Length: 105
Image (cartoon, rainbow, N blue to C red):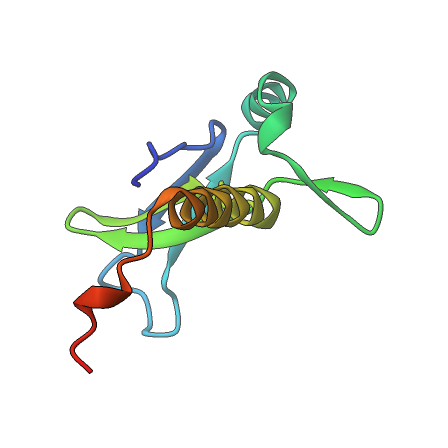
């Protein structure tokens, strides 16, 4: 159930310079025109909070350092998947004959 990672265009994340203090975790550069174009082309990835459009991202760490991906999790999609699974299980149970004779007691 792995989804392909979506990397936001116009946002670049870099590891900190070794000479920087420990409280610095990295650097992020935002190129506004690229980010705005990415958002226009990917409106389905945007969420809304308090009437404002947002692009929710996660900052992750991999073997090559820190990076950023778009958070594509959708609670509504998860609920739909759970409902589909529950309906499929329910249908299987209704179609499956009951074998009470197989009970060990």
